[in-house]
Amino acid sequence: MLVFRKPLSGIARPQMEADVVIIGGGPAGMACALRLSQLIDAHNADNPGSQLNKENIYVLEKSREIGQHCLSGALLDPRSMRELVPGFEKEAPIDAQVSKESVYFLTKNSKLKFPITPPSLRDHGNYVISLNRFVKWMGSKVEEAGITVFTGFAGSELLFDGDRVVGVQTDDKGVDKQNQPKPNFEPGYELKAKVVVLAEGPRGSLTKQLVAGINLDSDRNPQTYGVGIKELWEVPGGRIEPGEVIYTMGWPLTSKEYGGAWIYGGKDNVASLGFVTGLDYPDPRLDPQRVLQEFKLHPFVAGLLQGGKMIRYGAKSLPYGGWWAIPPVAGDGWMILGDSAGFLNSARLKGIHLAIKSGMLAAETTFEALQKSDFSAATLSQFQTRVENSWIKDELWKVRNFHQGFEHGLWAGMFHAGLQQITGGRGLRNRYPSEPGHKHLKKLSELPPDGGDEAPLLGPYKGDGKLTFDKLTDLYHSGTRHEEDQPSHLVIHDTNICEQRCIKEFGSPCQNFCPANVYEMVDDSSAPNGKRISLNPSNCVHCKTCDIADPYQIITWVPPEGGGGPNYDGM
Ligand code: SF4
Image: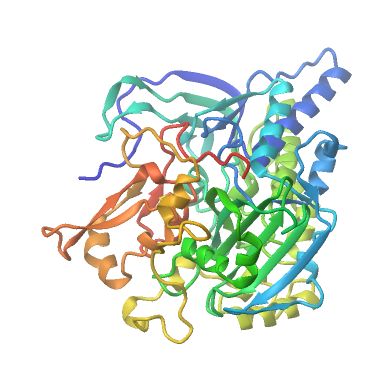
Protein backbone atom coordinates (compact mmCIF):
# COMPACT_ATOMS: atom_id res chain seq x y z
CA MET A 1 0.00 0.00 0.00
CA LEU A 2 1.52 3.29 -1.11
CA VAL A 3 1.50 6.08 1.48
CA PHE A 4 2.10 9.60 0.26
CA ARG A 5 3.77 12.50 1.96
CA LYS A 6 1.63 15.23 3.50
CA PRO A 7 2.23 17.55 6.43
CA LEU A 8 1.11 15.91 9.70
CA SER A 9 -2.01 17.43 11.17
CA GLY A 10 -2.65 18.32 14.82
CA ILE A 11 1.03 19.08 15.46
CA ALA A 12 2.20 22.12 17.39
CA ARG A 13 4.71 23.80 15.10
CA PRO A 14 7.39 26.24 16.14
CA GLN A 15 6.86 29.70 14.72
CA MET A 16 9.45 32.11 13.38
CA GLU A 17 9.06 35.65 12.15
CA ALA A 18 10.87 36.86 9.04
CA ASP A 19 10.83 39.93 6.88
CA VAL A 20 11.61 38.14 3.64
CA VAL A 21 11.76 34.42 2.86
CA ILE A 22 13.22 33.37 -0.47
CA ILE A 23 12.26 29.79 -1.35
CA GLY A 24 15.01 28.27 -3.47
CA GLY A 25 18.72 28.97 -3.51
CA GLY A 26 19.30 28.80 -7.27
CA PRO A 27 20.49 31.70 -9.45
CA ALA A 28 17.22 33.66 -9.13
CA GLY A 29 16.96 33.29 -5.35
CA MET A 30 20.63 34.02 -4.74
CA ALA A 31 20.55 37.07 -7.03
CA CYS A 32 17.50 38.36 -5.14
CA ALA A 33 19.22 37.90 -1.77
CA LEU A 34 22.48 39.49 -2.93
CA ARG A 35 20.84 42.51 -4.58
CA LEU A 36 18.63 43.09 -1.54
CA SER A 37 21.68 43.02 0.69
CA GLN A 38 23.47 45.54 -1.57
CA LEU A 39 20.50 47.92 -1.48
CA ILE A 40 20.15 47.67 2.30
CA ASP A 41 23.88 48.25 2.82
CA ALA A 42 23.83 51.32 0.57
CA HIS A 43 20.72 52.67 2.30
CA ASN A 44 22.17 52.15 5.78
CA ALA A 45 25.44 53.82 4.78
CA ASP A 46 23.55 56.87 3.51
CA ASN A 47 20.98 56.98 6.33
CA PRO A 48 22.62 56.28 9.68
CA GLY A 49 19.38 57.16 11.46
CA SER A 50 17.18 54.73 9.49
CA GLN A 51 18.73 51.31 9.62
CA LEU A 52 17.15 48.45 7.68
CA ASN A 53 17.84 45.01 9.05
CA LYS A 54 19.17 42.02 7.10
CA GLU A 55 18.90 39.57 9.98
CA ASN A 56 15.36 38.53 9.15
CA ILE A 57 15.97 37.74 5.48
CA TYR A 58 16.27 34.02 4.84
CA VAL A 59 16.91 31.78 1.87
CA LEU A 60 15.46 28.25 2.18
CA GLU A 61 17.18 25.63 0.05
CA LYS A 62 16.03 22.01 -0.01
CA SER A 63 19.42 20.51 -0.90
CA ARG A 64 22.04 19.53 1.69
CA GLU A 65 24.52 22.08 0.34
CA ILE A 66 24.14 25.21 -1.76
CA GLY A 67 24.07 24.42 -5.47
CA GLN A 68 23.58 20.66 -5.11
CA HIS A 69 20.29 20.63 -7.01
CA CYS A 70 21.43 23.11 -9.67
CA LEU A 71 21.75 21.66 -13.13
CA SER A 72 21.93 23.35 -16.48
CA GLY A 73 23.97 23.04 -19.70
CA ALA A 74 25.34 25.62 -18.86
CA LEU A 75 26.10 28.73 -20.86
CA LEU A 76 25.87 32.05 -19.06
CA ASP A 77 24.95 35.23 -20.89
CA PRO A 78 26.82 37.60 -18.56
CA ARG A 79 24.53 40.63 -18.96
CA SER A 80 22.72 40.41 -15.62
CA MET A 81 25.76 39.25 -13.65
CA ARG A 82 27.64 42.33 -14.85
CA GLU A 83 24.85 44.44 -13.39
CA LEU A 84 24.77 42.47 -10.13
CA VAL A 85 28.50 42.09 -9.49
CA PRO A 86 30.51 44.28 -11.89
CA GLY A 87 33.74 42.49 -12.78
CA PHE A 88 32.37 39.16 -11.52
CA GLU A 89 34.58 37.34 -14.04
CA LYS A 90 37.60 37.98 -11.85
CA GLU A 91 36.29 35.87 -8.98
CA ALA A 92 33.45 33.63 -10.22
CA PRO A 93 34.08 30.05 -11.36
CA ILE A 94 34.02 30.19 -15.17
CA ASP A 95 35.23 27.32 -17.34
CA ALA A 96 35.82 29.20 -20.58
CA GLN A 97 34.56 31.98 -22.81
CA VAL A 98 32.76 30.74 -25.92
CA SER A 99 35.18 30.91 -28.82
CA LYS A 100 33.78 28.53 -31.42
CA GLU A 101 30.26 27.44 -32.25
CA SER A 102 28.50 25.26 -34.78
CA VAL A 103 25.02 23.93 -35.44
CA TYR A 104 24.27 20.63 -37.20
CA PHE A 105 21.23 18.86 -38.49
CA LEU A 106 21.68 15.12 -37.87
CA THR A 107 20.29 12.14 -39.65
CA LYS A 108 21.00 8.65 -38.34
CA ASN A 109 24.47 8.36 -39.83
CA SER A 110 25.34 11.74 -41.25
CA LYS A 111 25.39 15.40 -40.37
CA LEU A 112 24.78 18.65 -42.16
CA LYS A 113 26.49 21.74 -40.80
CA PHE A 114 24.50 24.99 -40.93
CA PRO A 115 26.47 27.40 -43.15
CA ILE A 116 25.80 30.19 -40.65
CA THR A 117 24.86 29.94 -37.01
CA PRO A 118 21.24 31.11 -36.47
CA PRO A 119 21.26 34.41 -34.55
CA SER A 120 19.54 32.90 -31.51
CA LEU A 121 22.33 30.33 -31.12
CA ARG A 122 25.27 32.73 -31.41
CA ASP A 123 27.14 32.51 -28.15
CA HIS A 124 30.33 34.49 -28.62
CA GLY A 125 31.00 36.36 -25.39
CA ASN A 126 29.01 33.95 -23.24
CA TYR A 127 30.67 31.69 -20.68
CA VAL A 128 30.70 27.93 -20.24
CA ILE A 129 30.03 27.34 -16.55
CA SER A 130 29.02 24.64 -14.13
CA LEU A 131 25.79 26.03 -12.67
CA ASN A 132 26.45 24.02 -9.52
CA ARG A 133 29.81 25.72 -8.94
CA PHE A 134 28.49 29.11 -10.01
CA VAL A 135 25.58 29.01 -7.57
CA LYS A 136 27.87 27.80 -4.78
CA TRP A 137 29.93 30.92 -5.42
CA MET A 138 26.82 33.13 -5.46
CA GLY A 139 25.75 31.50 -2.19
CA SER A 140 29.10 32.30 -0.60
CA LYS A 141 28.60 35.98 -1.58
CA VAL A 142 25.12 35.93 -0.04
CA GLU A 143 26.40 34.43 3.22
CA GLU A 144 29.34 36.86 3.33
CA ALA A 145 26.76 39.63 2.98
CA GLY A 146 25.13 38.45 6.20
CA ILE A 147 22.04 36.71 4.84
CA THR A 148 21.22 33.30 6.29
CA VAL A 149 20.83 30.40 3.88
CA PHE A 150 19.06 27.44 5.52
CA THR A 151 20.08 24.35 3.56
CA GLY A 152 18.16 21.10 3.96
CA PHE A 153 14.85 22.96 4.39
CA ALA A 154 12.05 22.67 1.87
CA GLY A 155 8.91 24.75 1.82
CA SER A 156 6.03 22.30 2.04
CA GLU A 157 3.00 24.64 2.16
CA LEU A 158 2.27 28.32 1.76
CA LEU A 159 0.53 30.00 4.69
CA PHE A 160 -2.40 32.24 3.76
CA ASP A 161 -4.51 34.83 5.48
CA GLY A 162 -7.41 34.99 3.05
CA ASP A 163 -5.80 35.57 -0.35
CA ARG A 164 -2.69 37.05 1.19
CA VAL A 165 0.46 34.92 1.48
CA VAL A 166 1.81 35.33 5.00
CA GLY A 167 4.56 32.76 5.14
CA VAL A 168 5.58 29.21 4.50
CA GLN A 169 5.58 25.96 6.42
CA THR A 170 8.84 24.03 6.18
CA ASP A 171 9.01 20.27 5.82
CA ASP A 172 8.44 17.87 8.71
CA LYS A 173 11.57 15.83 9.40
CA GLY A 174 11.66 12.30 10.81
CA VAL A 175 8.41 10.91 9.36
CA ASP A 176 8.30 7.21 8.47
CA LYS A 177 6.96 5.44 5.40
CA GLN A 178 3.49 5.30 6.95
CA ASN A 179 3.53 9.10 7.47
CA GLN A 180 3.93 8.60 11.24
CA PRO A 181 6.45 10.48 13.42
CA LYS A 182 9.70 8.62 14.18
CA PRO A 183 11.70 9.12 17.41
CA ASN A 184 13.76 11.80 15.65
CA PHE A 185 10.64 13.67 14.47
CA GLU A 186 11.00 17.44 14.15
CA PRO A 187 7.95 19.37 13.04
CA GLY A 188 8.37 21.93 10.29
CA TYR A 189 8.43 25.61 11.17
CA GLU A 190 5.69 28.07 10.46
CA LEU A 191 7.82 30.80 9.05
CA LYS A 192 5.72 33.96 8.98
CA ALA A 193 7.06 36.45 6.43
CA LYS A 194 6.11 39.85 5.11
CA VAL A 195 7.17 38.76 1.63
CA VAL A 196 7.52 35.21 0.28
CA VAL A 197 9.68 35.06 -2.84
CA LEU A 198 9.20 31.89 -4.88
CA ALA A 199 12.40 30.97 -6.71
CA GLU A 200 11.95 27.20 -6.73
CA GLY A 201 13.04 26.50 -10.30
CA PRO A 202 10.83 24.96 -12.97
CA ARG A 203 7.40 23.61 -11.90
CA GLY A 204 7.88 24.77 -8.33
CA SER A 205 5.58 22.92 -5.98
CA LEU A 206 4.56 26.02 -3.99
CA THR A 207 4.27 28.07 -7.17
CA LYS A 208 1.93 25.40 -8.55
CA GLN A 209 -0.23 25.67 -5.39
CA LEU A 210 -0.33 29.44 -5.68
CA VAL A 211 -1.03 29.59 -9.43
CA ALA A 212 -3.85 27.04 -9.16
CA GLY A 213 -5.14 28.36 -5.83
CA ILE A 214 -5.82 31.88 -7.04
CA ASN A 215 -6.22 31.18 -10.77
CA LEU A 216 -3.16 33.12 -11.81
CA ASP A 217 -3.05 31.39 -15.18
CA SER A 218 -6.65 32.10 -16.17
CA ASP A 219 -5.84 34.26 -19.21
CA ARG A 220 -2.33 32.96 -19.87
CA ASN A 221 -1.15 30.24 -22.23
CA PRO A 222 -0.52 26.99 -20.35
CA GLN A 223 3.11 26.61 -19.36
CA THR A 224 4.88 24.02 -21.53
CA TYR A 225 8.12 22.27 -20.72
CA GLY A 226 11.04 20.25 -21.96
CA VAL A 227 13.26 17.90 -20.00
CA GLY A 228 17.02 18.16 -20.32
CA ILE A 229 18.96 14.95 -19.71
CA LYS A 230 22.63 15.67 -19.13
CA GLU A 231 25.87 13.72 -18.81
CA LEU A 232 29.26 15.13 -17.96
CA TRP A 233 32.18 13.41 -19.69
CA GLU A 234 35.93 13.41 -19.32
CA VAL A 235 37.22 13.15 -22.89
CA PRO A 236 40.69 12.62 -24.32
CA GLY A 237 42.57 15.88 -24.95
CA GLY A 238 41.99 17.66 -28.27
CA ARG A 239 38.44 16.36 -28.84
CA ILE A 240 36.63 19.54 -27.85
CA GLU A 241 38.19 22.86 -26.97
CA PRO A 242 37.29 24.77 -23.82
CA GLY A 243 34.69 27.28 -25.01
CA GLU A 244 33.55 25.24 -28.01
CA VAL A 245 29.79 24.99 -28.40
CA ILE A 246 27.93 22.51 -30.61
CA TYR A 247 24.16 22.35 -31.06
CA THR A 248 22.32 19.67 -33.00
CA MET A 249 18.79 19.26 -34.30
CA GLY A 250 17.12 16.26 -35.85
CA TRP A 251 18.10 12.68 -35.10
CA PRO A 252 17.38 10.80 -32.90
CA LEU A 253 14.10 12.74 -32.71
CA THR A 254 11.77 12.72 -35.66
CA SER A 255 9.96 15.71 -37.13
CA LYS A 256 7.05 15.02 -34.71
CA GLU A 257 9.04 15.82 -31.58
CA TYR A 258 10.64 19.05 -30.42
CA GLY A 259 14.15 19.09 -29.04
CA GLY A 260 17.85 19.09 -29.67
CA ALA A 261 21.24 18.52 -28.16
CA TRP A 262 24.13 20.55 -26.82
CA ILE A 263 27.80 19.77 -26.37
CA TYR A 264 29.92 22.33 -24.50
CA GLY A 265 33.66 22.17 -23.98
CA GLY A 266 34.62 23.00 -20.39
CA LYS A 267 38.00 23.14 -18.74
CA ASP A 268 40.22 20.11 -17.95
CA ASN A 269 38.87 18.12 -20.93
CA VAL A 270 35.39 17.91 -19.43
CA ALA A 271 32.51 18.08 -21.89
CA SER A 272 28.89 18.74 -20.98
CA LEU A 273 26.45 17.05 -23.26
CA GLY A 274 22.75 16.67 -23.08
CA PHE A 275 19.50 16.39 -24.94
CA VAL A 276 16.40 18.45 -24.35
CA THR A 277 13.18 16.72 -25.35
CA GLY A 278 10.01 18.82 -25.46
CA LEU A 279 7.42 17.29 -23.14
CA ASP A 280 4.78 17.61 -25.83
CA TYR A 281 5.64 14.54 -27.89
CA PRO A 282 2.87 12.30 -29.21
CA ASP A 283 4.16 8.77 -28.50
CA PRO A 284 3.88 7.77 -24.82
CA ARG A 285 6.55 5.10 -25.37
CA LEU A 286 9.24 7.70 -26.01
CA ASP A 287 11.92 7.76 -23.33
CA PRO A 288 14.01 10.98 -23.04
CA GLN A 289 16.90 9.20 -21.28
CA ARG A 290 17.04 6.78 -24.19
CA VAL A 291 17.03 9.69 -26.64
CA LEU A 292 20.30 10.89 -25.11
CA GLN A 293 21.79 7.38 -25.29
CA GLU A 294 20.88 7.01 -28.98
CA PHE A 295 22.26 10.49 -29.68
CA LYS A 296 25.67 9.36 -28.38
CA LEU A 297 25.68 6.52 -30.90
CA HIS A 298 25.76 8.97 -33.80
CA PRO A 299 29.23 8.63 -35.42
CA PHE A 300 29.90 12.35 -34.89
CA VAL A 301 29.13 12.22 -31.16
CA ALA A 302 30.61 8.76 -30.56
CA GLY A 303 33.84 10.01 -32.14
CA LEU A 304 34.03 12.88 -29.64
CA LEU A 305 33.39 10.63 -26.65
CA GLN A 306 35.30 7.49 -27.59
CA GLY A 307 37.90 6.60 -24.96
CA GLY A 308 36.28 9.04 -22.52
CA LYS A 309 34.41 8.42 -19.31
CA MET A 310 30.97 9.53 -18.11
CA ILE A 311 31.36 11.12 -14.70
CA ARG A 312 28.01 12.68 -13.82
CA TYR A 313 24.33 12.42 -14.76
CA GLY A 314 21.24 14.47 -14.09
CA ALA A 315 17.94 15.74 -15.42
CA LYS A 316 15.84 18.84 -15.08
CA SER A 317 12.74 20.26 -16.71
CA LEU A 318 12.73 23.72 -18.25
CA PRO A 319 9.81 26.03 -19.01
CA TYR A 320 9.29 26.65 -22.73
CA GLY A 321 6.01 28.54 -22.78
CA GLY A 322 7.57 32.00 -23.09
CA TRP A 323 6.02 35.41 -22.49
CA TRP A 324 2.37 34.39 -22.91
CA ALA A 325 2.70 31.62 -20.30
CA ILE A 326 4.20 33.76 -17.55
CA PRO A 327 1.61 34.27 -14.80
CA PRO A 328 1.25 37.54 -12.88
CA VAL A 329 4.52 37.60 -10.94
CA ALA A 330 3.48 39.51 -7.79
CA GLY A 331 0.53 39.85 -5.46
CA ASP A 332 -0.33 40.25 -1.79
CA GLY A 333 2.78 39.09 0.05
CA TRP A 334 4.37 37.13 -2.81
CA MET A 335 6.55 37.26 -5.90
CA ILE A 336 7.56 34.57 -8.42
CA LEU A 337 11.00 34.58 -10.08
CA GLY A 338 13.20 32.76 -12.56
CA ASP A 339 12.16 29.40 -13.98
CA SER A 340 9.26 29.22 -11.51
CA ALA A 341 7.69 32.14 -13.38
CA GLY A 342 8.88 30.89 -16.79
CA PHE A 343 11.61 33.46 -17.52
CA LEU A 344 13.43 31.37 -20.14
CA ASN A 345 14.29 32.14 -23.74
CA SER A 346 13.57 28.82 -25.46
CA ALA A 347 14.96 30.01 -28.81
CA ARG A 348 18.33 30.60 -27.15
CA LEU A 349 17.99 27.70 -24.70
CA LYS A 350 18.98 30.12 -21.96
CA GLY A 351 17.39 31.26 -18.73
CA ILE A 352 20.11 31.80 -16.12
CA HIS A 353 20.63 35.45 -17.07
CA LEU A 354 16.87 36.07 -16.97
CA ALA A 355 16.57 34.29 -13.62
CA ILE A 356 19.30 36.53 -12.19
CA LYS A 357 17.76 39.69 -13.59
CA SER A 358 14.32 38.75 -12.26
CA GLY A 359 15.91 38.19 -8.84
CA MET A 360 17.46 41.65 -8.96
CA LEU A 361 14.18 43.32 -9.91
CA ALA A 362 12.33 41.44 -7.17
CA ALA A 363 14.98 42.62 -4.69
CA GLU A 364 14.50 46.25 -5.75
CA THR A 365 10.75 45.88 -5.23
CA THR A 366 11.22 44.18 -1.86
CA PHE A 367 13.59 46.95 -0.78
CA GLU A 368 10.93 49.57 -1.52
CA ALA A 369 8.33 47.52 0.32
CA LEU A 370 10.60 47.25 3.39
CA GLN A 371 11.15 51.01 3.36
CA LYS A 372 7.42 51.69 3.13
CA SER A 373 6.46 48.76 5.40
CA ASP A 374 3.86 47.95 2.77
CA PHE A 375 3.74 44.42 1.35
CA SER A 376 0.42 44.68 -0.42
CA ALA A 377 -0.21 43.78 -4.04
CA ALA A 378 -0.14 47.49 -4.88
CA THR A 379 3.51 47.78 -3.79
CA LEU A 380 4.77 44.34 -4.82
CA SER A 381 3.19 44.61 -8.27
CA GLN A 382 5.96 47.10 -9.00
CA PHE A 383 7.94 43.93 -9.70
CA GLN A 384 5.61 43.22 -12.61
CA THR A 385 6.10 46.78 -13.86
CA ARG A 386 9.87 46.50 -13.49
CA VAL A 387 9.91 43.27 -15.50
CA GLU A 388 7.80 44.85 -18.24
CA ASN A 389 10.12 47.89 -18.41
CA SER A 390 13.31 45.83 -18.40
CA TRP A 391 15.32 43.98 -21.01
CA ILE A 392 13.65 40.76 -19.80
CA LYS A 393 10.52 41.82 -21.67
CA ASP A 394 12.52 43.09 -24.68
CA GLU A 395 14.24 39.72 -24.99
CA LEU A 396 11.20 37.51 -24.38
CA TRP A 397 8.83 39.61 -26.51
CA LYS A 398 10.92 38.86 -29.62
CA VAL A 399 10.44 35.11 -29.07
CA ARG A 400 6.93 35.23 -27.59
CA ASN A 401 5.55 32.72 -30.08
CA PHE A 402 8.65 30.61 -30.64
CA HIS A 403 7.79 27.33 -28.98
CA GLN A 404 4.10 27.43 -29.92
CA GLY A 405 5.21 27.47 -33.57
CA PHE A 406 6.72 24.00 -33.09
CA GLU A 407 3.65 22.41 -31.50
CA HIS A 408 2.70 20.93 -34.89
CA GLY A 409 6.12 19.51 -35.69
CA LEU A 410 9.57 20.51 -36.85
CA TRP A 411 8.79 21.70 -40.37
CA ALA A 412 5.86 23.91 -39.33
CA GLY A 413 8.06 25.19 -36.52
CA MET A 414 10.89 26.15 -38.89
CA PHE A 415 8.40 28.05 -41.03
CA HIS A 416 6.96 29.95 -38.06
CA ALA A 417 10.41 30.62 -36.56
CA GLY A 418 11.56 32.15 -39.86
CA LEU A 419 8.46 34.32 -40.09
CA GLN A 420 8.75 35.40 -36.47
CA GLN A 421 12.38 36.33 -37.04
CA ILE A 422 11.41 38.91 -39.67
CA THR A 423 8.30 40.20 -37.86
CA GLY A 424 9.84 40.87 -34.44
CA GLY A 425 8.38 37.71 -32.92
CA ARG A 426 4.85 38.17 -34.25
CA GLY A 427 4.66 35.60 -37.02
CA LEU A 428 1.11 34.99 -38.24
CA ARG A 429 -0.52 36.58 -35.19
CA ASN A 430 0.43 38.46 -32.07
CA ARG A 431 -0.32 35.61 -29.69
CA TYR A 432 -0.07 32.00 -30.79
CA PRO A 433 -2.20 29.70 -28.63
CA SER A 434 -0.77 26.67 -26.91
CA GLU A 435 -1.87 23.40 -25.33
CA PRO A 436 -0.45 21.72 -22.24
CA GLY A 437 2.21 19.25 -23.39
CA HIS A 438 0.51 16.16 -21.98
CA LYS A 439 -2.50 16.78 -24.24
CA HIS A 440 -0.29 15.90 -27.23
CA LEU A 441 0.12 12.31 -26.00
CA LYS A 442 -1.75 9.86 -28.17
CA LYS A 443 -3.35 6.67 -26.93
CA LEU A 444 -1.65 3.41 -27.94
CA SER A 445 -4.70 2.52 -30.01
CA GLU A 446 -4.01 5.58 -32.18
CA LEU A 447 -0.37 4.61 -32.86
CA PRO A 448 1.31 1.94 -34.96
CA PRO A 449 2.68 -0.77 -32.61
CA ASP A 450 6.29 -0.25 -33.76
CA GLY A 451 6.16 3.54 -33.97
CA GLY A 452 5.74 3.49 -37.77
CA ASP A 453 8.15 4.67 -40.43
CA GLU A 454 9.43 7.56 -38.38
CA ALA A 455 9.81 5.45 -35.22
CA PRO A 456 10.91 7.53 -32.25
CA LEU A 457 13.01 5.82 -29.63
CA LEU A 458 10.75 3.59 -27.70
CA GLY A 459 11.10 2.04 -24.29
CA PRO A 460 13.97 1.52 -21.88
CA TYR A 461 17.55 1.08 -22.95
CA LYS A 462 20.23 -1.39 -21.86
CA GLY A 463 23.39 0.43 -22.92
CA ASP A 464 26.87 -0.99 -23.45
CA GLY A 465 28.27 0.37 -20.18
CA LYS A 466 30.92 2.44 -21.99
CA LEU A 467 29.26 4.88 -24.34
CA THR A 468 25.63 4.26 -23.45
CA PHE A 469 23.96 3.42 -20.16
CA ASP A 470 20.77 2.10 -18.69
CA LYS A 471 18.88 4.38 -16.31
CA LEU A 472 20.16 2.82 -13.11
CA THR A 473 23.80 3.20 -14.20
CA ASP A 474 23.15 6.80 -15.19
CA LEU A 475 21.29 7.38 -11.93
CA TYR A 476 24.24 6.10 -9.90
CA HIS A 477 26.21 9.01 -11.37
CA SER A 478 23.69 11.59 -10.12
CA GLY A 479 24.74 11.10 -6.49
CA THR A 480 21.08 10.89 -5.50
CA ARG A 481 20.39 10.12 -1.85
CA HIS A 482 17.22 10.35 0.24
CA GLU A 483 16.20 9.22 3.68
CA GLU A 484 14.68 5.81 2.81
CA ASP A 485 12.14 5.59 5.61
CA GLN A 486 9.78 8.37 4.56
CA PRO A 487 6.49 8.48 2.68
CA SER A 488 6.53 8.84 -1.07
CA HIS A 489 6.96 12.44 -2.19
CA LEU A 490 5.48 11.48 -5.56
CA VAL A 491 1.83 11.79 -4.73
CA ILE A 492 -0.48 9.84 -7.05
CA HIS A 493 -3.99 11.03 -6.39
CA ASP A 494 -5.70 7.90 -7.75
CA THR A 495 -3.65 4.75 -8.36
CA ASN A 496 -6.74 3.05 -9.82
CA ILE A 497 -6.26 5.24 -12.88
CA CYS A 498 -2.69 3.91 -13.26
CA GLU A 499 -3.73 0.27 -12.96
CA GLN A 500 -7.06 0.29 -14.76
CA ARG A 501 -6.85 3.00 -17.43
CA CYS A 502 -3.34 4.30 -18.04
CA ILE A 503 -1.78 0.86 -18.43
CA LYS A 504 -4.20 0.11 -21.28
CA GLU A 505 -4.65 3.55 -22.81
CA PHE A 506 -1.09 4.92 -22.70
CA GLY A 507 1.04 1.91 -21.66
CA SER A 508 2.13 3.50 -18.33
CA PRO A 509 4.36 6.24 -19.79
CA CYS A 510 5.66 7.18 -16.30
CA GLN A 511 8.05 4.24 -16.74
CA ASN A 512 9.41 5.93 -19.86
CA PHE A 513 9.46 9.66 -19.12
CA CYS A 514 10.96 9.38 -15.65
CA PRO A 515 14.75 9.53 -16.13
CA ALA A 516 15.44 7.88 -12.78
CA ASN A 517 13.44 4.63 -12.79
CA VAL A 518 11.11 5.79 -10.03
CA TYR A 519 7.94 4.31 -11.55
CA GLU A 520 7.51 0.61 -12.20
CA MET A 521 4.50 -1.51 -13.10
CA VAL A 522 5.17 -4.78 -11.28
CA ASP A 523 3.40 -8.12 -11.68
CA ASP A 524 0.49 -8.60 -9.32
CA SER A 525 -2.14 -11.19 -10.12
CA SER A 526 -4.64 -9.41 -7.86
CA ALA A 527 -4.40 -6.15 -9.87
CA PRO A 528 -7.07 -5.63 -12.57
CA ASN A 529 -4.61 -5.84 -15.47
CA GLY A 530 -2.03 -8.06 -13.73
CA LYS A 531 0.21 -5.11 -12.80
CA ARG A 532 0.28 -2.67 -9.95
CA ILE A 533 2.21 0.55 -9.67
CA SER A 534 5.31 0.54 -7.50
CA LEU A 535 7.50 3.55 -6.68
CA ASN A 536 11.18 4.01 -5.89
CA PRO A 537 11.06 7.61 -4.58
CA SER A 538 14.65 7.41 -3.35
CA ASN A 539 15.78 7.45 -6.99
CA CYS A 540 14.09 10.78 -7.75
CA VAL A 541 16.36 13.46 -9.22
CA HIS A 542 13.71 16.18 -8.73
CA CYS A 543 13.31 16.91 -12.45
CA LYS A 544 9.47 17.30 -12.12
CA THR A 545 8.84 15.54 -15.44
CA CYS A 546 6.20 13.24 -13.94
CA ASP A 547 4.26 16.17 -12.50
CA ILE A 548 4.27 17.75 -15.98
CA ALA A 549 3.92 14.86 -18.42
CA ASP A 550 1.45 12.48 -16.78
CA PRO A 551 -1.52 12.25 -19.18
CA TYR A 552 -4.16 12.29 -16.41
CA GLN A 553 -2.44 14.99 -14.30
CA ILE A 554 -2.79 12.88 -11.17
CA ILE A 555 0.87 13.06 -10.06
CA THR A 556 2.00 15.83 -7.75
CA TRP A 557 5.65 16.20 -6.87
CA VAL A 558 6.06 17.51 -3.31
CA PRO A 559 9.42 18.05 -1.62
CA PRO A 560 10.83 15.01 0.17
CA GLU A 561 12.49 15.46 3.56
CA GLY A 562 14.90 18.39 3.18
CA GLY A 563 18.46 17.42 2.31
CA GLY A 564 17.42 14.55 0.00
CA GLY A 565 17.93 14.56 -3.74
CA PRO A 566 20.70 14.55 -6.31
CA ASN A 567 24.20 15.84 -5.82
CA TYR A 568 24.99 17.77 -8.99
CA ASP A 569 28.59 18.45 -8.08
CA GLY A 570 30.26 20.08 -11.11
CA MET A 571 27.07 19.95 -13.22
FE1 SF4 B 1 11.70 13.31 -12.27
FE2 SF4 B 1 9.31 12.56 -11.32
FE3 SF4 B 1 11.16 10.73 -11.94
FE4 SF4 B 1 11.49 12.33 -9.81
S1 SF4 B 1 9.91 10.79 -10.08
S2 SF4 B 1 13.03 11.80 -11.33
S3 SF4 B 1 10.58 14.22 -10.54
S4 SF4 B 1 10.13 12.11 -13.35
